[in-house]
Image 1 (cartoon, helix red, strand yellow):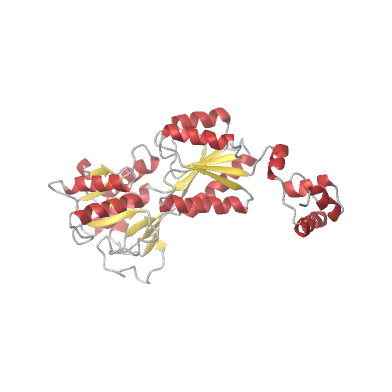
Image 2 (cartoon, rainbow, N blue to C red):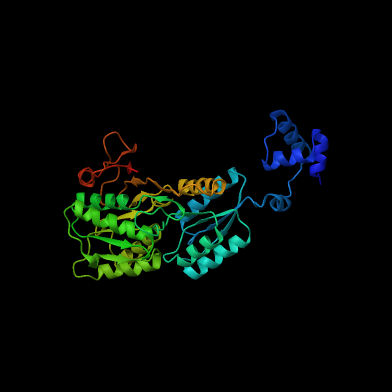
Length: 372
């Protein structure tokens, strides 16, 4: 097996110069750098990453702690994180906190003990122990998807954060259904305590208000962000004396649960009850009816989290940032619109109006960008 000394002899440089080229620890003249890289290629030299980490105090690895990795949304986030990390020469260590605050702290500690250079975390509903651990050990961290409130009013967040817009796209789904004539629009919301759950409830209530509809707490239920919970919650809605004529489900797993509950009652979508969902997924277009949905830029969220983390590692003292990425409204048929009914000009995306009531009066977009 070739060694760094072999590379140095072949390139006609010192071992220190080879180290600087491979580790990026000091500028090297372009022709010298190329000679070293040519020698590495010719000899098939593989750097000893363990030895390198002992010298640089960096492992060029990132820890990712995300619950429900089997969920297609988080799977796509994982793909975005992995691609961006590999592009920058970083490996990835993955753990599933299972949305349990105690387990969350344990897996984050495990990743930290593996000497990752930083972490990307989708925090649980109660991240107090997580925040305490990260703060005590000064771990470079980016929160993704689920955001954490700053410690006080007017104060910046403790950590960098990136996620999709949640409130306005949910408003868009509600006003779309209201624009189709629905007056009792239910919401199957997610796990209480998550920022995404709170924001989508806020968007739901804004959509009702913008459409001149009253808020009825009886038709807002929690599916706890998973299919079985949503199935039970939807069944409870269907037991009401005056059940909703339309539903908004707040993530893709809960959409599956809601559809199961409707099928169990022999109800059709959209004939008996219209449905719009937050989270698009690969087979949403294959359902009958095809699912009208909000699509999140999941891969972009993952890639952006990596870039933010590497910025934080490079400059630990920089101000924290919170970034929101826009979603896409994907218009299909589960809302009750005829198949292929679109805005003039066909299926091309167009900018959504910032005025929810204006959007409600023109609901026939195929793919609408929500404003950032």
